[in-house]
Amino acid sequence: MLLELRNLSVTRRGRPVLDKLDLSVAKGELVGLIGPNGAGKSTLMEAALGLIPFEGMSSLAAMTPNDRARQAAYLPQSREIAWPVSVEDLIALGRIPWPGGGRGTGDRQAIEAAIARMGLEPFRHRTALRLSGGEQARALIARALAQETPLLIADEPVAGLDPAQQLACLRLFRELAGEGHGLLVSIHDLGLAARFCSRLVLLAEGRVLADGNPDEVLRDKAIHRAFGITIRRIDTPDGPAILSV
Amino acid sequence: MRALFAMLTMLVAVLFAMSLLTGPAGFGLFDGLRALVLGGEGPMPIVMREIRLPRALLGLAVGAGLGLTGAAMQGYLRNPLAEPGLIGVSCMAALGAVLAIQTGLSLGSALALPFSALIGAAMGAALLVALAGPRGGSVTLILAGIAISALANAGTALVLNLSPNPYAANEIVFWLMGSLADRSMLHVGLALPPMALGAMLIQGTCRDLDALTLGESAAAAMGVSPATLRWRLVVGVALIVGPATAVAGVIGFVGLVVPHILRPWVGARPSALVPASALGGAALVLAADIAVRLILPGRDLKLGVLTAIVGAPLFLHLIWKTRSGGRM
Image 1 (cartoon, each protein chain N blue to C red):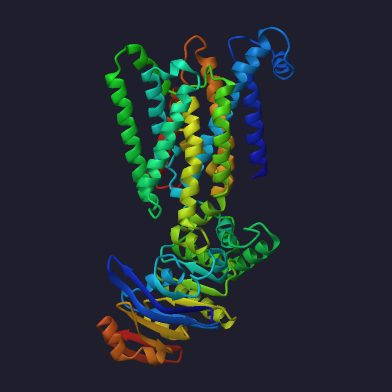
Image 2: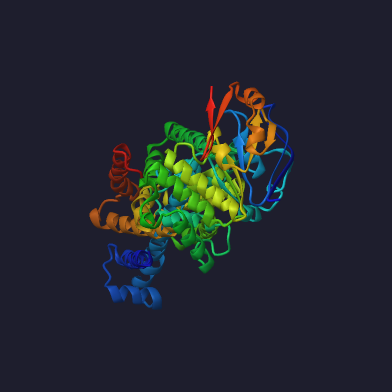
C-alpha cells in the first residue's frame, strides 16, 4: 500500500470534519475522491499528509517530513506561484526533498523527464507567472512529477482547465497509474471520474459513503444522499457520460 | 548568475576601499592602505584603523544584513513589499537607544547606547515570539510586528514629548536618522558576531524559502516545517536587525529595494536572492555612506536620510509597477 488511513478523524472548532475514516491507495490505482463541497476532500488530503492535526493513523504522516516528501507529491488546489521564476526553476523545486536539491545529476534527469513528459520544452525559459492558467497547471504537475514519488495526491487538478486540458491531465494520471504510481485525486466532474478513475471514494459529511469501482459507487441512492441530486448514466463507445438532474 | 555574483563582489570590494579612502583627511590610495595594513607613525594609521576601518566594516555588515534580511522576509511572506523592519525589532532597538540617550546612560560609555538598543531588540523579539505563538501563521507574525512597532514608536514619541532638555531631544532625533560616523572597533565587535550568527541561520532557511514559492501547504508537503522555519527566520532577522540598528540607527529602504532591484537578475529564486541581496545591500550602504561624506562634507548629512531619499522613489516605482498589473 502506498497510503493507508485508519480511523482518521479531524475536528475543527469542536465540529467533526472527518469522522473515523478508512482509506487506502495501492500501486497502480487512480483513486477519485468525489463528494459535495465541504465534504472534507481537501481536509482528508491535508490530514493524510500530516499538514493539519488529526486523530487516528496515516501511513504518510507517520514518516519523517523528508521521507514523506519522497513518498508523496502534493498538488494543492490553489495553484500558487509566488515569484516570477522560470518554468525550469519551478519544476526544479520538486527536487528539494532529494540530496542534490535540484542541482545534482539525478536531479537534472528528473527535471528533463518531467519537462519532456508535460510538453513544456518550448516554455522552459519562460516566466511561469506569464503562462496561461492551463500552462501553469501543466508546469505545476511537472513539478510534482520531478519529485519522483510513488504516490501523487492532487486536489482538484482539473478545476479551471478547458475540456482538452482536463482530458490531457486525466490521461496522464491514468498513464502514471499504469506505470505503477498510486494517485489520489479529488474531482467534481462525475463523468470524468467515472471514465478515468480505477476506483472512486464518495465522501459526504466527513464519512465514506461508498468505496469501489465507479459502477458500484455511482449509484442513485448514494449520489442522492451525498449531493441531493439524481444522475442519469448514458453509455457511449468512449465510456459513460453522467448527467446530473 | 555567476557573473552577477562576481560583479557584485567586485563592486562591494571597490566601494569598501573607497569608503576607507573617503574623509576630511585626504590620504592617497597607497598611503592610506599602507597605513591601514602596516601601521607606522603619525595620525594616518590611527585615522585609518580607528575611524575609517570601523565605519567601512559597519557599512559592509549593516548593508549586507539589511539586504539579506529583506530578501528573506520577502521570501517568507511571499510579498515584495516586506522588509526587515516589519517584525518590530528595529523599532524596539531604537526605543532602547532613545532611552539610553534620554537617561544619560549613553554619556557614561560608548557602548551603553548600542547595548541598550540590543536589550530593546531582544525584548522586541521575545514579545514577537510570545504574540505570534508557536503555531501562528505569517499573517499573525506581521500583525504582531506592526503592534510591536507601534508600541515602540509610541514609547519613542513619549520620550521625546517628555524630554526635559532640547539637547537630548535633538540628539535623539539625529540618532534616529541613522549614521555610521564616529563608530569604533568596539561597535564592530559588538555587532558583528550576532549578525554573522543571524546570517548563518537565515542562509540555512534558503531551501525552505524556495519551497514556499509554491505556497505554504505545498512547501509543508515537501518537508518544510513551518514552525521551525518561522523560528529560525525571526531569530535570524532579530540577530541582524537588532545589532544593525544598535550601531547605525534606523536605516530604511535598503531591505526593501535591494531585493526588488536584484530579483529579476537572479531569476527570482529566494535561495539566490538572499546572498545576492546581502552583496547588493552592502554595496548600497557603502555607497550611501561615501555619498554623505562627499555631498555635504561640512554638514552632518545622515545616512538614513540619504537611503530614504534614494529609496523612496524606487519604492514608488515598485508601487507603480504593481498598480499597472506587472507582478514583481
